[in-house]
Image (cartoon, rainbow, N blue to C red; front, side, top):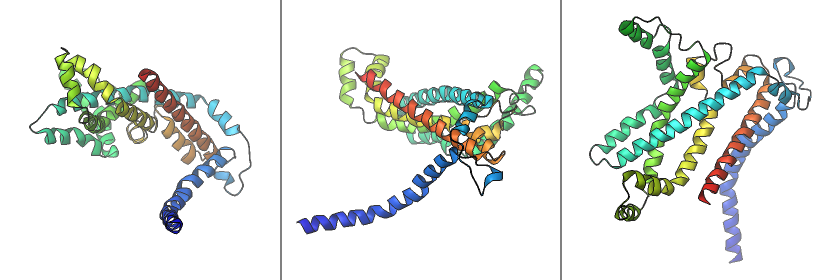
Length: 292
């Protein structure tokens, strides 16, 4: 028996070892090197020698005015797009859960934005909201108004990216919530109906508590995605004007590959990871306190 147990452990180790080795080489080691980079003066001119400078890169990040601009942009983008995606996705999921005919067709139609390329969708939105784009053409033909520079100011440019982000995420939330709704026991709805609960009360008192775990999962995943927004900002506004529409990831990319300040970007990446970790903990605790 002991020999068989030892053989099982050897087999388990042999099966896990390749995956652990790949994880260590391509995940753990790069993170460790990035952490080391954040404490060094690492730029295009110091590829052979990277002197240790301690917390100077982190000080540079927090003393940079543009950092606070892009940090606020990321917060606003997340606060707008995450609730919008979740609310619209849940609404579509509830509606589709009650449809019997053509339900598959409606699900595919709502999921199409998710599988649409971010680059293609961003280019289409840039064409629509460009100064000489489709929206201004339609408005000028209908009202005779002058062209609006949608992408040339901070909040209007961010608003276009937020509209795209919300539109792209509805389908994913629909699938996640639809799967959760199908797991809610029908007995709960029958009991609520017998107690005289209407549609809204059944949704509030039965549906939402039953899918609370799914809501938390979607909230955390979408928050991470909101902070990692890159393609839409890069393609639609490019950070203009003067980096006022940049987010954390686009600003990090600019500092690393346009200015060569890799140490600054490494420090910014760990600050971003810390913020996401703290937000995830706060979300977990908020849901736990609500359960209590």
